[in-house]
Image (cartoon, rainbow, N blue to C red; front, side, top):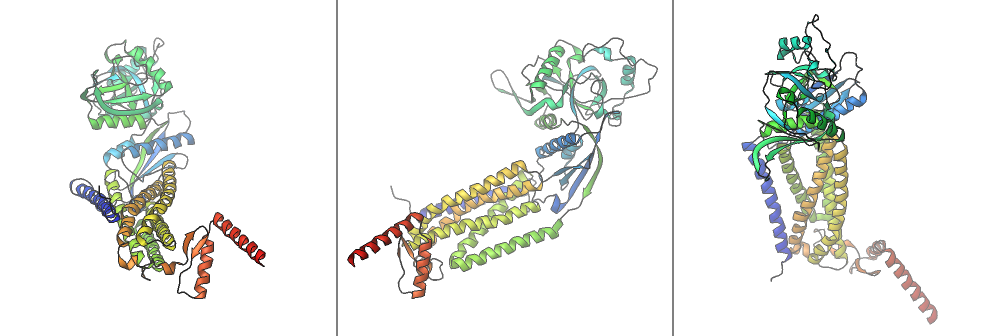
Length: 574
């Protein structure tokens, strides 16, 4: 079998790089033509502006104001819900000790706004009465709380007998029954349903305002849900039925509470066999109970589509806020930094790029052309990846992200410098250029991988622990670190393998940047050096000093031992 030559390996690497670039360009081209893609990256809140929604907490009468811990928990959950919708670079903060401010770049779609404005307390309540037929069933789920006060003061409001459990119809007093009969679903949002007393029954409607319900007290809190996902239902043979369902996982507390509820509801009939999942004062689902669920993993089935099942799963997973909120304001905001700051950031990056190019030209002469070409390839590859992320993942470029891209110039240039210096070391050792490129690459790639691994680890850690714009910086830093490895492996090294066969470089032209005479002493190993010929005494002295600097500790000791041995020999001779 014929041995693969360095030139063939170089051409193969360059072909793979071309395939990657073409694939990214084609993918983004498809997105730009047939989807919502673009040939310009989406900008974040600080560069483009967006929408600001202020949420104010609601508490029941006589209850204390929300604590700072509750607000912080609410901020974390709202952030999860927004992230789940594919929106990046959103800012969610507390305002003073009361409000939560949500700032989203650009113009969010209605689904994202609904996710934010419906981010309230999630509860599970049994159904006592309803004018609706059940539309789903369990293996898991329920709906939304909302009270409806009216003036029925002459009617009894206290149960005639003490209710024995949350499904006991003794909760339906004459006053509550009259209020239910007079209740209009248009009242749900105005009566403060999302701050209803969890220990009392509740009158509310479903989220389409079609049916109304009387619900018993809260039996399972939404905070006990540890996970919720959507998926297709499988039969006993493991074959998909094509029906979408929502799968819930409770924590240990929720598992016990839900087992107790389903054990009771499963023995009941009619609407009392149902339980309601209540979010923001409205029932989002009221399934029937088909079995006793003791493992804490109920499944809700019904007339779900893939989209509706995912929406319900997200509401269950991220909707369990410790307090309820109402939208205080919804306004459009301008960019906090804008185009001027973006231009300043890009100018800083351009200055840094020019300085790197100047250094490369001064230090590496014509070899700097490889540096410049590699930077161009890295920039093109990074830009295409950012475009794809903007389209597919909703990534938005903030000023912090731009800073991450600017830092990448130094990271990429550092890899080139490490590689070029390793090649020069091999030339000093007396190797030819082709051999020096191969040997230098083996030494350089280990250093480059170690350096980039540290950078990527730092970026990944920052991405995990940070929020907001800092995440954007971490993402672009990690992305460009990976691009650096790709470019140096699939472009820089192959280009050097090709130019190593060019006489201008292989013969060490003085403007090539690889002239052995200009590189100083030619290192021979084991503390010995071969000095270049045809140079002045001053140059030879400078070369000797450079050679001594390059000695390892072991080589220095060997040289000292050799010197002592020579001195003893001369002493004996004398």
